[in-house]
Length: 356
Ligand SMILES: [Zn+2]
Image (cartoon, rainbow, N blue to C red):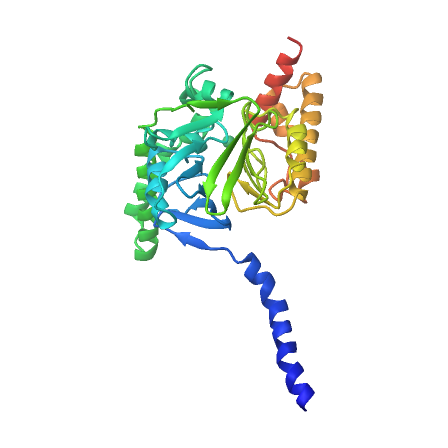
């Protein structure tokens, strides 16, 4: 009896620890403001997404140090970035010192102007060239316009739907959607592309003073991929990497991509020692398998599109005909032939320029 009474509690304790420990280890602090949800991935490393009350479109990352804060990506509008800045008080009272742009796309960088002038903006030289207008006007490009030109129509349609809806609950839901999209539209009109004032070509390392010593923050351009200037933010001690849109849980937009070079850049990403990948859209990824799957998709798309190009099929026809359904096991939406025409136009553009 005596022996039993001694072993039973300890056996219970061990059993309880076995059950609870993994949950305790993986338990993540989640803090919300009205507009933003902050998930603590490692100590003072936050993955940030919108709650829906303000249209943010993309994720961000926030690194809180002992003296200051570094933010990665600024969302889609000054409105969304302003809401992010106002929300930081739920996790820290430290001032923002740096903003890093993972790439130049509107949904990650058109909130830049909302950051105070005291904040330095860091990005790739290509990101600066795009946002400063040195290479074209980002507000006139297909990428921005194909996502933004439909917003006034959507706002007008939602307004009509609100008026036509008689069910009070559904009407309330529509009113909220209308409010969010109308505010998004208003802020879209005030966007002034604002470039990084500190640039890098291949690599830069920051050491942020934190309560646990200095945090190494590596900014790495691993090669061209989703754009000509993708930068990943790698935290070696925390084994975390923020990838922007170079690597997402699903398929990434390819309209400005270097689809032929992208798989090699992803190989360099795979070589980094990380456990958690924070994407520019969607939830964290805790495996490298999706990277391999995406490499296979990109290689296959490049080959299939090149074959169409060689046969003289025009880009529009190719976009309808190319069959990627052999990847439907990884990407459920690929149920029938057809690829985003913006991706095919882009690959044709690269192929047309190859011989020059
Ligand atoms: Zn992007």
